[in-house]
Length: 222
Picture 1 (spheres, rainbow, N blue to C red):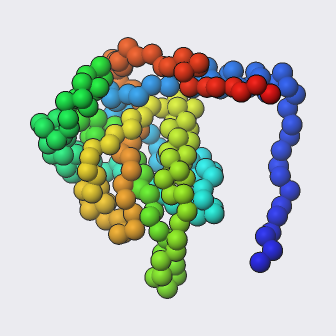
Picture 2 (cartoon, one colour):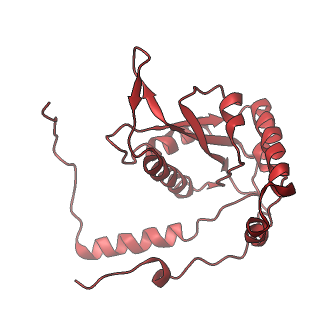
Picture 3 (tube, one colour):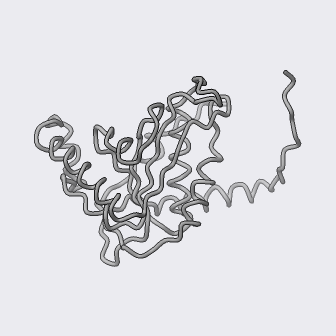
């Protein structure tokens, strides 16, 4: 089958503008921080919709877009999620995680208590679709699922920050309870539980430093 191609919508900026945009975007994203102290202040559902629209511009294997975002604002459902997440986290911090992992978490000051799961106005759960389901119930193969969903997650977090909100990538392990509570189909697996909202007025974050560029980039000679 011959692919249907359309013209690329692209306006080429000047080289100085390219450099200025790259630096400006870095400076904005360098202010992004993971936040655990949320305000309960309301965020309209339309904002969450646009954040997911932005995330869904991510490239994906064979353009299968193997992700589902489930956004939760209902207090009762958030309460159920917190109870289930804290149950797993008590197991994790109580012996399931090895000492090396616990030592790595010490600078973050985390523990099994997750009040942000009820305080944040939205919990956005990202599910990976391990395979698709066709109109007759047949399985549809997806490609590069982990890579595709990872890119969508990154774009979602970027969109959250660009909108002036904050987020947390929470990964209570195992996360099977999320599929049960949110009544998701068997082909989906929860990847991230992302509280989204405004930071609390007294929010504090760990004093961390990112790796220098030399540790994460190698430019080979031309």
